[in-house]
Image (tube, rainbow, N blue to C red; front, side, top):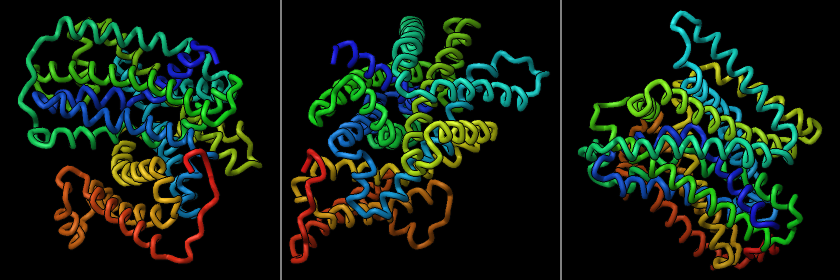
Length: 443
């Protein structure tokens, strides 16, 4: 495979990951963390860059990808978990969130107040999803559209915004807000969940591996090598963008309080470039959200086409764009209200599954290790999700609060380790344990 092919796949991967949440959350983190910025950003990058690319690497190591990893716990768990992940990153959360943010930042600021906002959202999302549908119909051409046409424009726009921000914004970082005054590293770690990128990586693995195979690469080790090279390119660009946006957010905090990252970037762009700044920011959000929706639509359609083969890939693309279009018109506030509790539940399970994949050979492929670890993690991940959703947990809340690291939203970590230890002991003493067949290159 040519060097430029790896570069273009890396750029495509960057564009697929870089969506609404990737723009919104770094500047907000920068404004909130203040003088604790670098600790908070380090934690953010671990879960928004490190974890997603660890997922990609793990998926490239395992034949049949993410479903095969989850299948090591149990086939029923694999079916339910993967179905939930694809629904969340696709039609129910990820796709409509990005489409709605693209409208809020790319079109709404330029509309006269007298115009009907609901009608404008309807018309915008109709055109938006029509274009998504057209491009997603042929996944083999996605690299061309995303990496060679759209991503370079997106990167140039980001460089312009960040360079001017660095040159003109020089206010000192402020006192950290509550939550960042202590444990800023852990707070940033949890904030990285909001990008949804680790869950998206479970789906994007299919797309990236397909793109590499189309270049004539079929050997498992070679697939892993090129996946890792593309991930390094995308990860470097994402980290650079996050740090830059976070610094802008941190310097803008001296100008007052802001509701979220969109408010920060809107105020910064106007302060830096006036009306032209609003246009530039609208272009950035539109391109970033569009490429992410195309990536999500393609990967989710491929998954559901395998799950329901009679429907076919093109039918799945149509259904996903239709559902995404419908839910995008519900409004951003409702979408975000549902997404956060789900992410708090799903991320811990994803983290332990990927960690177990890398240590797969060392505990001799024992399913009991997977089962016990996921069970112990899942119980407290669900409690964390319910707590985030505002559900009163009663006595269970007391148990949750007394667990180590619960103050940082990591109450599942110690139970996960305990579950892994229990699974190891159980597998050692179970005489009926039958070595599994070698499933993949990690065996």
